[in-house]
Amino acid sequence: MTEILYTLIFTSLLMGGVYAYAVYATRSGIEEDENNNFIPDSWEKTFKWVFTGKVLIMFGLGFAVGFLVSKLFF
Ligand SMILES: [Ca+2]
Image (cartoon, rainbow, N blue to C red; front, side, top):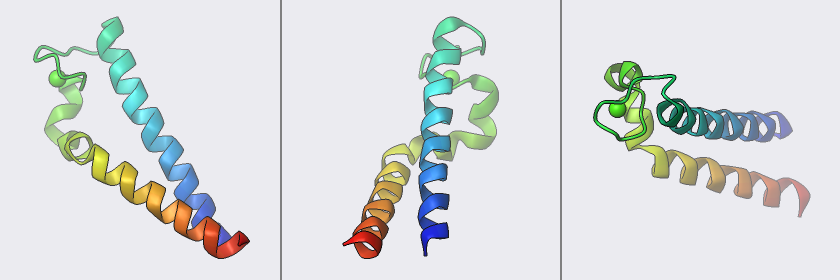
C-alpha cells in the first residue's frame, strides 16, 4: 500500500513540475507560445489533455493521496 502512496506522491510532484515548467518555459521564452495560454506550442498537439484536465488530475491525485494517508496512518 505504501508503494502506491509513494508512487502517487511522486506523480503529483512530477505533474506539478510539468505545469510549473510549462509556465516558466513559456514566460521566459524558452518554448514558443503564440496563443499565450502558457502551454508550449510544441506540447499542445500531443499533451493538450494534460493541461485541459489539470484541475481534475490534481484533484484526483490529491484525493487519492489523502485517502491513502488516512488509511495507512490513522
Ligand atoms: Ca500555447
